[in-house]
Image (cartoon, rainbow, N blue to C red):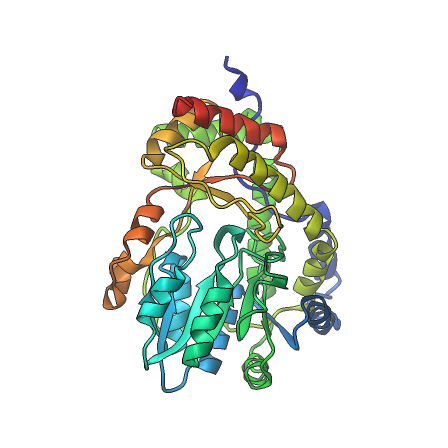
Length: 418
């Protein structure tokens, strides 16, 4: 048996600890889920730590995008954004009354290309929405200059990039508004949740006014997400993952068993939604706020661990001609929620790595500019289309381990004969 088959680590783990589930169980049993001033305290803490006038808790990051767009879009309704994102971001633009205008991306960062933004902005553009994907900061300073010169609102989707910086400022705080996510796959995890930050009083007032009419998130829906995460925690925990779960995933991938593969894949059924779903219109509960607070004291340590893993990947893979790596960052501005590499035949590479005992994943997002459901907004974005077919995600989460990262690198180098 090959050395690489020794109890592989899972491709991803939920952030948090067993204590996260203990807090949920305690608060639900004691009827405390909707009691306490924790939401207001959380907002105050984020406002201080990020240096912004307003921090507003929201039920999900995508709802934050919807609320901000509702506040800034008036006569001008076109929203320039990257097509390389989850399909529900496009739906939030449409639900808020916007018209998506897809700007192509930079290949290396997978982020929106400032030059494309500049070419697409016109008199009907109401906002530019940028995404700091994979924890890699956009060239936000160049984009700010474009937006300021045209009098256009800039919104930062920092759902995957809490802790990243551009210059000396946190991403999310540089535009007119920023949106963070505390969803189950993010580096600060409250199962559901998010935050809007802004320095604009009028924008903050409008977002708060709309949120005031929303009821709290239903406990049943929240507990369903907690249960899903708990099952995932058990199935991906060493040594159970190496003994049982991995072999099921491996069999499904190598034999293309769709019933298994779809369990770990998102974006299966993208669709156009013109009105925001009713169950999105909720507000964050004090229980969710307490969960966020638990991770605020450790996220910087987690961030350093991810940056260390990313530096290993970069050192060992960046010289391979067939592999496109994201930019290295010695200053700490990128936080690498994952480490995305691009290869021309990622299916062949993934199958090889899985056969050799690795557990990795392709990026589940696609080029939304070419999705049939978004045909009314279709636009040719060649870089996004190519990137969407080539990205393979290398794990960086805390606890993954430098040894695991080096094993990934060794096999990738072997595959390409490096």
